Image (cartoon, rainbow, N blue to C red; front, top):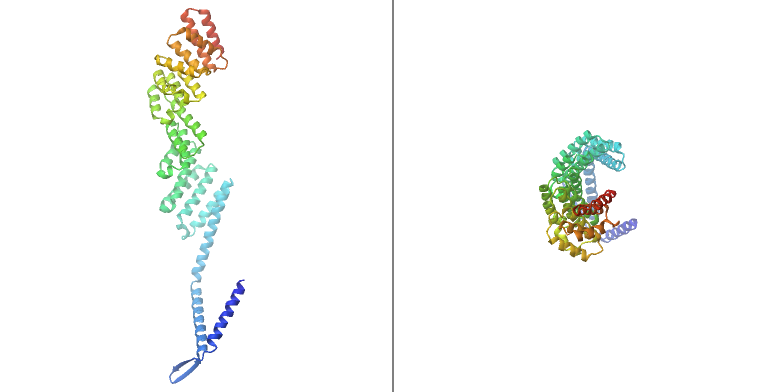
Length: 416
């Protein structure tokens, strides 16, 4: 098709030349020292075009000869750059293919080629990336000393490159934090993550690394805040996020060593965590263990004021958590529990909580009936049945019935 187009253009030029030059009777006269030369205008124009073409060709030939060393040097430089790029790509492919020794050698070859050419050595970003690949390979080979040397070199080159290699510096720091976590060095990982710019520190990968580091450093409150940020960034599914947040809140509460520390942890929890029935139940259990039943009841009170919005398993956990913190309760709790038991008569754990509340208020008759029903119910948790038998044994002791007391203790012991 191209040949046809050229032929058509050639024919068109021939036609135009025949029409314009065929009837051209003009002359071109040249005078020199008494001599006169007359040539046809057509011949003059052809000679002029030929001379211009010859002159341009001569100039290009001279330029090609004079620029030959420069072009040869550029060609050699491009070949070296191509070889360095090929070595870098090979290192990346070998790293992904888990051939870490080969990846390290390929990356080192790329560095040698790049560093051996002064013109190519100015590409700091390329050198930083090659050092990062070498460090990654050394990390997989458990060569920590070589890894740290290469990482430091990559960071130095990235900082020297300025804003053009900002991504290289951020990537190097994220890799350094990940490698520190692999070494189980939470302090170093947190220090590296603390050096990240605010925008980079809010990225999902940085938040994941911070979550792992805070959990490894046993900082559950910081881990909880990081996990909540990850949940907002949709770093987890909704179910996984809820389970993780609960487990971190449990860990933070379980880490309290006294009542004041437990209160501080509870206040530092996010309001959404304090509105979680399971977290509040865990806090009440911790309060009971530390001898602060009033605080435990206070944290559970908002949930018992509106049990209808909760699931049955959540009501069960609240009932189990309430019993250990019933000591010193007021009469208002009896009203709450009686209303809850009437509203949900099939939930035996609410009856279990009500029975212990009646015993706490010294309403022995009603308490004994409800506790006996709970203790004989094999569908109830073993811990709740055992606590009910122990409460019945104490009631029998107050009545002076040693035989019934012994039977209750024996039944409680059989559930251990």
